[in-house]
Image (cartoon, rainbow, N blue to C red):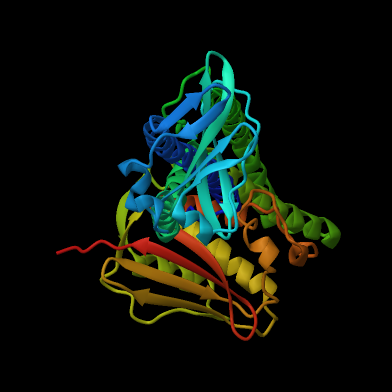
Length: 463
């Protein structure tokens, strides 16, 4: 099974990373706009302070009163008359709340609040919203020798700063899809990098089988890190599993060899006894049954021997052999109910011909066993440039989908096989032999009913 780029786990990681980065992006933007707005206010405040200090020079303090000495050119600036982004709105108030001066453009607004009385030595700044306009207003207390005389209020529009903020906000909104794609890309790469060791573990463990326990996890990770600990723990598990499997193989190999000799002797003696005619027909039948059962036991032990050495199966006696030779031998075994292809010459395989014969024989035996008594088994052969496909089709009840992935397990017998003779070793032998010939065997449904075993093998071209 190929790794999917968007599994549920990867989607969860991508969603979490995307959500986290979007939260960070939103917080950053809020902080950035607040900081930018504050900086713009500071720039305006510096300008207002400078202007109010100039206006303060035109004020005279006499006794307990505050008067404007003269309306010099600063009080006649065009900025005090107009209403635009560069306008200034000036109000001068004495300590009794009497307006000593109001700039001409004040009349265009409903009124700017006066923070009065203001008993502070510091210049203060506030923001007002008047008639839909946002104003930045500064208050400069007029004092002498600690005595409060009045204050100067100077306001200006924040429109210029607002334009800058609006442009930045517009750019932020326009660029958001690109930023979102960028965030998704980073989240995707992060998920792939995070899941890469786990996928490596899945890939290696899928390839590990009883025939190939030598593979180990080799991705880089700190031994003290969780991924490093997982890697080392699984490698230790594989080491222990390999040791136990080797011990089981050794035991099965030895036991099978030990069983083969007495079984062969038993069969020989039984065949010798049956050559003699017995007056007791029941004894004669019993001997024949014993011979049949001994043959079955010998076949089982042979299969166990091959499976116990499946690392060498198809390799210990490798040879180049023609398919035609194997099919001719099978034709002699099955003169009826099995249809073989006619043209099989010029096709050669590499492997153990005896094992390959046993593999095909096991499939055909199963096909005949589960087909009706009058059913036919078809053996088809399809040539290719570098491979050949051998299909064995039966007319049996078929194999349920939930069992197709398990029929090659040793000693596994499905629901359809419970009433049939067998030990669940034949198809395990088939898979072992075909894999060691660098091929594969696939189980499919036959139409309208039945099963198809398809064997795919590399062919050799002999000149």
